Every structure is written in C-alpha cells, then in structure tokens.
Amino acid sequence: MNQKIAFVGVGRMGANMARRLKDCGYTISAVYDTYRTMAISLAAELGCAAPETLAEVTASADVVFTVVTNDASMRGIFLESEDSLLKNAQGKIFINCATLSPAIQKEVYAAAEAVGAHSLEAAMASSISHAREGKLYLMLAGNEAVYQSVLPIIEQMSVNRRFIGGPGRAAEVKALVNMVMNINTAGLAEGLGLAAALGHDLNMIREVFSQTGANSRVLETDAGDMVAREHDCWFSAEHAAKDSGIAQGVARELDLNLPLNDATKAQYDKMVTLGLGGLDKSGIAELTFKGRHA
Image (cartoon, rainbow, N blue to C red; front, side, top):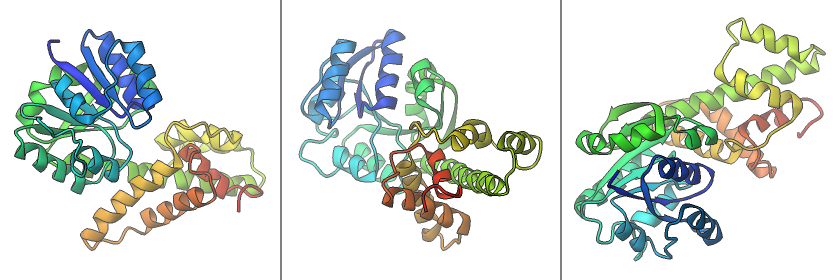
C-alpha cells in the first residue's frame, strides 16, 4: 500500500483500473493521457496530478501502468520522444496492459532494464466492468521476481492471473486469445447471417448452437447484439483488426499460414474502411446479414 501508482492511458480501461486501485487504498499519484481533458477530469476525481510530461509521471510514482492503443503509442511513450517514461526511471516498475506485439514488449523490456527500471507485461482478457470491479484476467510476462514484487497490486485488480514467462511471451498468448476470439466472432456472424437468409428463427438457431459443437463464448456475448444490431462498443472492430494483425505478423515471421485469421482480419479491415471501425466487434455481422452493409 506504500507504493505510489500512476497511469498512462486513461480511456475506459485505464480509468477504471485507476479507480479500482484508489478504492483499494493505493495512492494514485498521477494520470496522463494525450487527451488532456480526460486526464484532468480523472485527476480531479481521484485527487491526483495530471502532469503535462511523461517524465513527471515517472517521477511521481513507484509503479506506472500503461494502457495505450498500439505499438506506435508504446514506442512514443518509452522510446522515441525526448519526454520519455524512462527518463530518470531507475528502480521504477512499468506494467504494460495493452494488447501489443511481442516485438515491442521485448524492445521496451530491454530499454527499461538498460536504465535500471523494469517492464512487466500484464495483458488483459476482460471488459471494462471487470477493470472497475477488480475481476480482470491477466496474462503476465517479464522478470518473475518483479512480478512477485507487485503481486499484491495485481491481485487487487484480477480475479485470476497467469505468469507465462519471459518478455514477449504474454503478448504472444494474448495474440492467440484474440485471434481465436475474432475468428469465432466472424464465424458466428456468418452462421447467423446464413440462418437469417434461410428464414430461420434466430432465437431457435442460437439455442441449437448453444447445445452443439457450434457453441462458443462469443455465442453468449455477441449473438444477441448481432441479431438486434446493437453494437455499442466494448471491444472495437478497429482493435479486432489490429489484434488479428498482430497474430498475422507473428505467423509470417514463422513462415506459418493462417488462412482463417487472414480472412478474419480482412473482414475487420473492411469494417474500418467502411467507417464501422468504432462499432463493437459484433458489428462484423453487418457484413454478413443480407440487406445490411455490402
């Protein structure tokens, strides 16, 4: 409880993680986001600073959580700017929670170690409500001793967790999780779209799917939204495209062919092209139901 904690990237996930740790009695020292108004608002709520520089964030805290959008954003806060989280960072611990490529996680890990700091992956496989309630599922990687040193914090944020291995390993597993989830979502959308075109009662189809080999986690979470065309965003199509792309890039490095993942990424890329990237990933059904988007 004596450790001061800061957050970089306070969108819906990062902000709710910060609120959770504040509720648990931790001192939130600073919040930072490129959208200054969002950071200032959350800082006022939590009673902490909203620094204008990343170096100030590091100076304020013992542990810094980052929840950024993509590899470029990660590189920007650690590696490519004069204003870096790694400035005067000796002894600091960075816990990086976004879904990013294994390569950038390894790069940040090495750069942190070079200045006497530590970088830990904590890939999330949960939703916004889980972040607020401390019920995340976390996949962690890096130095296991560093993981153990922050485990009390991690336990307050997660209902379950798994330490996977050295740098990049959690990112690899998270890429696999999202790759399979996205493929399942695309497959479900095609199944429901075909059933609708055949004139079947989609409630009946969903019940049959749930009792057969067509069952899946996304049947529970996404099928109703696909049928009702309710695509309020919990996990965006744009992020699905990015994450399927991470798996695609890793596979290509290994000279491995993943045709289902390639096709799924193409569908989510199409959503982005059509201006639908801000919809929830369930919005992929807009591409498969007859009479919706082409």
